[in-house]
Amino acid sequence: MSGERIVLAMRWGELYPPGYVNVLYSGVKRQISGPFRFVCLTNDCEGLDPGIETFPIPDLGYSDYHWKSGAWPKLSVFLPDLYGLRGRAVFIDLDSIILKPLEPFFEEPGEFISIGGGPNWRRGRENPKPELASGVFAFDLGSQPQVVEAFVKDPKGAFDEFKLEQNFLEAHVTSWQPWPDGWITSFKRHLRRPPLVDLVLDHRKPDPNAKIVAFHGDPRPIDVVRKGNARWAKFPHAGRGPINWVRQYWLDNGYRDDI
Image (cartoon, rainbow, N blue to C red):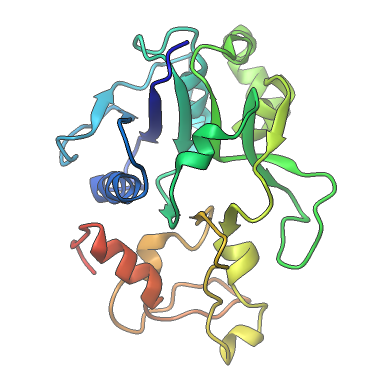
């Protein structure tokens, strides 16, 4: 296994415009030193920064519900030979904000390291039984082929039993462990105020030791960066207008469309 460092991202469908990939690429470049490759698996390369390497998303037998429910296409990264890529990979969801240097994500030892999510992944709570969440994960490319092997045997059965790809991953990766506490911050679990409180208090800013902020689910970063006073929170939460630190991050990393 070579020592090459590869940041993986993935884009399909129309939910995330090309600017999402470009902002993530810019954010990664600012927070990593030395050589690395930024690889986006996508079936539409138009509008992407020329520094981004692109390859098609391998089709493992996905049906419409795999593309539209959860993030099942992520399983493609576990092919034993992913376009000849070799080395340590860190996969990062497009709706992530990079705050601190990424070297620790490549250096943390473990066969498979991912977000330790689940119901107790909340501010001020211990999380004694974390559940695998696939927003940011690391592994050696080619080291987890059993994930693909299990899925291609019965793609529909995998969906029917597990519903989300991260549940399937937890059942099939070897020796998974969560990232150290505090490395990944959830916007909606850690920074968003409780209902009613968010009517009078602004959202929290990330803790100083947070390295990545994950905007999993709603809201998404694009929802909270636009000018004006449009509502973006869903009942029972309140939220209007831009969140300034998120908006500034997107502007600093080159995003201009519709904000």
